[in-house]
Image (cartoon, rainbow, N blue to C red):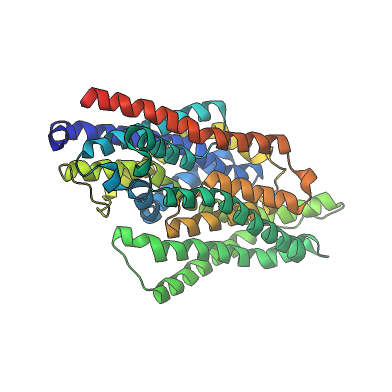
Length: 424
C-alpha cells in the first residue's frame, strides 16, 4: 500500500538512516578489528595508529569501491516479483529495517564479549530470515544465497593458500638466506609495489564509476602501475632509516629483518582497511539504499536505482565511529590468539586477505572479511607447522560463524513482525 509509504515515508527513511548507522557502527567495532588485528598483533603498529589508518582507508574503500557489493545486498538476495513487493512495497521496508536493527544488535552483543563474528553473515542471515518467515520461501533467490555461502568456504581457502605461498616466498627470498637483512631491504619494495598495484587496479576497474569516473582497462592498468611505483618509492624512503643491529646473536639479526617487514605492514594495513571498507560497507548501506529507493519513488522498487553519495558517506562514517569508540576491544586480542605473528607473517596474511576481499568486492560477491583473514592467518601458521596454531581459538571462531546466521535470522523475524504490527 503506497499510502503507508506516503504517510510514514519520512519516518521510514529516518529509521533506516539511524539503523544503518548503528549497523555500520557495529561493523567498525567488530569486523574492522579483524582487518587491523594482525598489524597490531605483529607489533608493526600500535592500536592508535591502527585506528588512524583504518579511519582513512576504511572510509576511502567504502566511498570509492563500496557500490558493487551494495547492489547485491539490496536487490540480489530477494526476488522482488515473487516477494510481492510490487503490490506491497512496505513489506520490503519492514524487512530491511528489521535486518539492519537485528544485525546491528547482534554485532553489539558480539563486540561487547569480544567475539569476532562475521558482519556479512549477520546481515544476510537477517535478510533471509525475514523473507522466509515473513513473506515466503520462494521470495529468496536461493541460487544467489548458495553462491554467497559457497564464497564463505572458498574465500578463506583461497586466502589461506595465497598467504601460505606468500610466506613461503618470504622464507625462500629472505628469512632462510645467508643475509636476511640485506635481502629484506632488497625484496620488500617489490612486495610494496604489489600491494599498491593491487588496491589501485581493483579500485580503478570496479569502484570509481560510482563517483563519476570511468577509465578503460588500459588506462586503469597504467595508473595502477603508477600508484604501485609511488608506494614503492615511499617504501624505499622509509626503509633507508632502518639500520641492521650489530648482531651477536640471531634474535637481534632477525629483529632487524622484522623491522623491515614492519614498514611493509603499514602498507598492507592500509590495503586491508581499504579492502574491508569496500566490501563490508554494503552490509550496512545495502538495506538503507533499498529503503531510500522505495521511499523516494513513492512505493516503486527499482532494482537498478542509483546509489546516492550521502548513503556511502553515512556508512563510511558509521564504520569509522564504531572503530574509534569500541574497535580496541577486539583489535587488542585478535592478532595474538590464533598464532604468534611477526611482521613478516602478518604481512603475508594481510596481503592474501586483502587480495581475496578486493577481488570479491570487484565481482560483487559479499565475502566475509573475518573468514578471509582467519583463513590467511591459518595459512601462515600452517607454513610453520600445525603446532603453531591455537586450535581452541580457531574452534571458537568457527562456532561463532555457525551461530551468527540463525541468531541474525531469529532477531530479524521478531523485528519484522513488530514493525509490521506498528505501521500496518
